[in-house]
Length: 129
Image 1 (cartoon, rainbow, N blue to C red):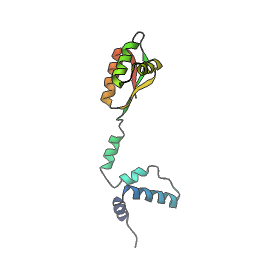
Image 2 (image 1 turned 135 degrees about the horizontal axis):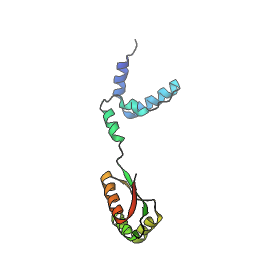
Image 3 (image 1 turned 180 degrees about the vertical axis):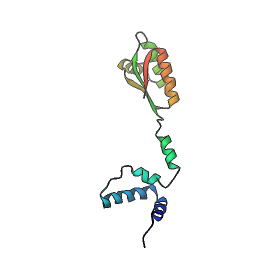
Image 4 (image 1 turned 90 degrees about the horizontal axis):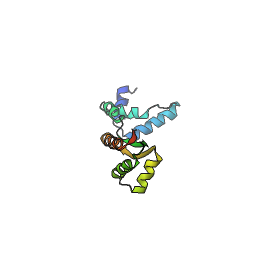
């Protein structure tokens, strides 16, 4: 009496993610193969999971990096860095003078855009990654 593919899929759909992970590992060992994307096995039972995965790939956290400062604009840029980060004068000055340093990491897209606008208005050259 053979088990059908549908029965196997129904069984996998009822498993926890940990159980599916262990199943994939056991199949890799038994058949001598490597799963290129083991997450795809866990996502297969839920049809809605495919649409959610595409949304998760979009970048949600950005780093604001001060690349350089225009001549004669160091003081206004230091003031902006202090206002944005809450750092003291010495720390903010070190970041501005070092150049190519992250002002803030892991910020939202809107916050990164606002920071870039303010720093550029003060005379800084900014990159958002």
